[in-house]
Length: 426
Image 1 (cartoon, one colour):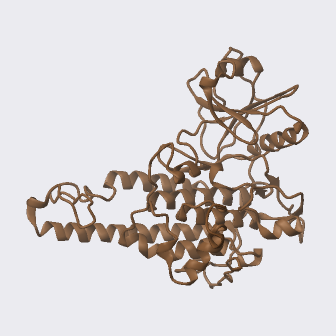
Image 2 (cartoon, helix red, strand yellow):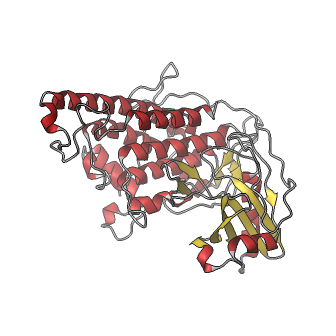
């Protein structure tokens, strides 16, 4: 059997990431004011959204809903409001009095009520501590008798696994979108690990817990398995706890030692990166025996120089795409190394992805300029034509980026959003 990937961490004497290098520096920690819970709320049948004038990065109060309010919002939890179902329970869509659309997550009532209650309380506790652009925001909750319900912001575009499967949305994620999603998840985990009073370990990072917005940005959801990490006591490196998570994403060290630490999330993130760029689930039992564990199969292909074999076949690769694939997969295999000492921390992984994204955009710009220069030699007769890859050629008289690359306006908006998100961690 092939060994899992093992990349020794590479050290550098400054804080910059070069190609295929991970710098060994410590993440900066800072305290974050804990939000207030149980804020006053409107007494009408349908309440207002909490946090009027909400600003990203400033934790706000979570409302305590009543059952009458939630019945009103969901049409008595009717099938017409149902939007999903999972291990925790059923998810419904509703609308608050001020027009805010929310997701209502109703826990199952079963023999495992004690376990469900504990997961519910964990999720409420964790979500009321955090506020970040790339984390699903808690709006409120209800806990009375045998009912446990979470009300969170509604993320409109399904989850990452649905997009990788191609249904029900049918939108192919190109390289740019996948990089943005990877960066968003890395930023969320960096925030949880380094920018809260104590590190928060998500413990269930997986594609179905990554929700996608209409602009194809990512938000990390589902904190039911989350756990506070080691305290600031000298020498504290882990917490000993029962193993929880999802098969295929579980840190092998945690699985065997029961010792949980922030690098357990890093392992799951590495598996997620492999999934994001191969399109395959971590475990696919219908595959041939040597392909069933995706990370092992992909690593073997990678070291044997068959990189193109592991790329999601739905991605139409460009010259710019090919220049960054080595770096993406080296980072993915470094994060999913079998032992935590060989993994980067999330801050390092995030910075590595930012540098890959920056270099990728530079190559896209050069590629576009070269295409425009080639096209301009042929005059207007090629306006609206197609290049040798079957893609529309840019108009020589139009905007500089009027062809198959992003427009100046779109790129400016995206960079502004990227910078806003990145500055949020500062």
